[in-house]
Image 1: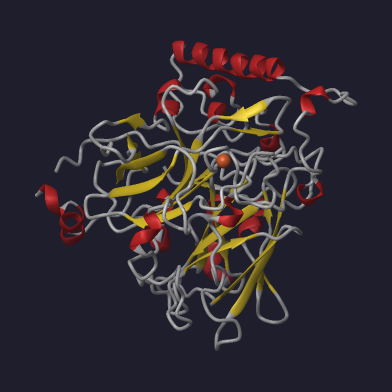
Image 2: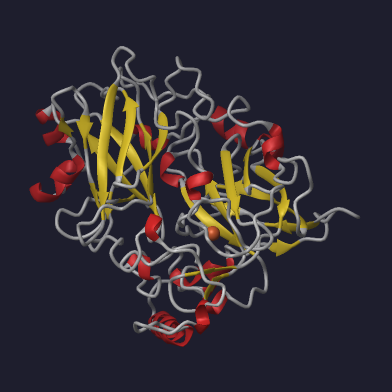
Length: 290
Length: 187
Ligand SMILES: [Fe+2]
């Protein structure tokens, strides 16, 4: 019963515990099925494909208004975003450093006395800005479910086991080349209440800062080949396949460590910077390419 | 280095409902220790399109100090109680209310309208939203502000905080509908 309890039907703390056999309970109200949702998702996808063919530009970000993700219905702005030129504070980011984040926070498998259950993985890549410049010395935060699809969160009532050796939170500061690296456990898929038999593809939540506050994003990284992609209204909030692909990590055997962990690569590109960089900043961030 | 190479940005996704054990941290919403000289409370409520409060939103603010300087100091995640870093994070509670302890931002140049930059994340919000919180006092600066003067009067009100009797600021977020907050696109 976890993620995304439908706001119109359930409020957060009053959600009753999940029933393992919920699918076999009598249905006392019209419950939307995956087939209903898939029909909506497919119709929106086909309309987008037609628009593309007729020359509309490709969409690169999720739609704020995407009704198949039911919780978005009352939570998306109806007026279009107002264009603004970033000014002063917006052209800078908060500064994070090694005072803020301990080096061990990037290993999610050593936060308890024992080893967590599941498939140990390494997720590594680089954070770049839209000009391809590394985002150095910035904060990356991740959180995720454990290997059976359960979060350490009071609202997660999915009847899957909690792992006493896994919390699922990590942080790191990017290197001079924009690199980040986490050791963790491959998260499990989990059910949620958008519709009957809704399941989220396995994912890791990522929070990222750029060199300017307007580059700030929170997103989700997925694993290649997940059969739940076409069924998931959150992944599908991005209607463009190329854009969706940018959230999917690549299996990378060169990151895999013998007898230890499988490696996945995922690079993140933030929007283009707007500030005019000084020579020093430009050299500092891209120092190892000079 | 080739600055001509334009890469396509990675899409955002909703913060989901389970950030609550991951993103908040101790004193995350205290840019200044409460009660310290010059500190004010900034508070507000986040509403959805039906006028209901949202219990699962999280905000970040980023602002200059009281003199209008953009601060570039580390220590936001492990606050020492003295260093003003200019950045804070505040999750709303069950009633949809967020609070920060901060300072009134100063004008970053003489005569400019001071504002706080805001990023908003929520379950059901598919991508973060940016906006600004302006201080209400300097009406001449507000009238000359490039962003505010590009908005019609009804909409520009959504970006200007109210001054509370105790010196604090109140500023609400309406994600949708009547009085919908102006959200910004910087691209
Ligand atoms: Fe999740």
